[in-house]
Length: 537
Image (cartoon, rainbow, N blue to C red; front, top):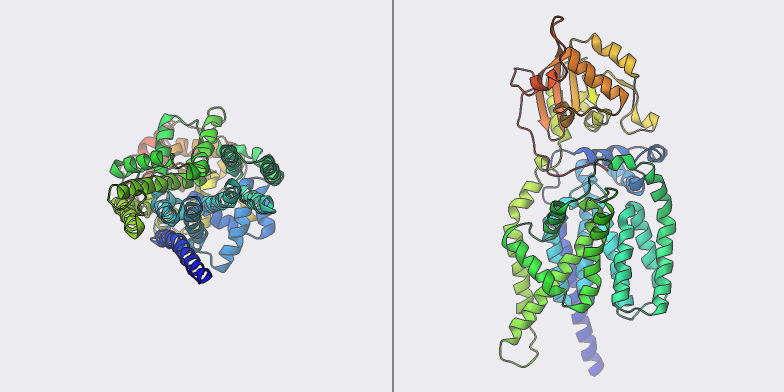
């Protein structure tokens, strides 16, 4: 009889734990799928789309010159996009990664505390706006988060004094694989080492952990070595200041402003007092961002997406703090010194999370708009398809903005790429090889009409391109052409230029003043879309 009762209790506990993990997973999946087809890719997503559709030898050739840090992700996306090359399929792996992370955060809460803490933690993670943002990005960061949180879950039995034989190679293997997706995953090792120190792990555990860390190092060092030679790709990053730190704190909260934010901060602070949870969650939340911000004061490398996995610590602490509040309130009622809040307390926490989600609903809707990304290449291509005449020459400034035509070729089907000499796949580059500056100048000076797809910041400032061919493009456009129309989508401007009269002065920068006017043109001027986030690795 006792065995039967114990068996029923065990099955009931397992069902409760399964529900606590499944509900946040399903909620995150629903949030990720909501509005997944935004109707356009932005620059980084277009890189994933274009590289993923190349053959494996072509991807391998490209990685020797750029994006070695994303090599494994591109190879995985090659398999995904082989099923169907579309925007929704492009983003589905990130949706699945975010859903898996929400479930793993819930599982951590279950293991470190109790099922209701896991349920709340997973739900808080799922409704955090930053999580939903990267769940809908065709990049690797949501998958990286799943790998790090999964490795953290494998570490929990070790922290609790119940290490399983051979645990270190499963833990190390998962972290090594994840570090190949993005090399800054190695910062999670610092958080995990701190966790073992706070838990006073025995010497044998430290020995096994060092083996796992060594495995990660052996795997990731070649990626680090290659990516160092490609460090120019992150030259746009700047040293983070206190405003960046404040923004990171707000992004890691369930709500970036108002009552939800301050309640979340208070619950996280209270959750730090729950030692079993805090030993794991606090180092994960604090150390990777703190280390990267500190290093970035000397060599800028910081961006919130590179430490997105650290966000998992915040909902764990917030849920632990909520549990403390619920238990305290239960003790105020008569019924014994240690009353159990039960289902009412669990439901109260779920309703609180739901209220936070409702308050942040405008943020979710805004995030699902194409205007909330740095640019919308589909919109640029649509204007090009409408306004370009057959045979019209088009110039890309810099050449990387050929992404618009490569991602949406139908929009530029009638255009003539005046600078391109060899395609990207054939040359082993992203956007292809262009002609020499002298040859390009000769081609441009005879034109009467020219379309330009350009970095909008370059056309509106005194910044000069570093590439000689791009400098010639800008110089000839300034000297010999005047703008007649401009469409801007975030960082990308699509402009029509016409030849100046022979007697007109070629004043440098005149094209910028003309381009900002409201002169009639085939390209209908439209409002410039905002640029909410920096882009490109």
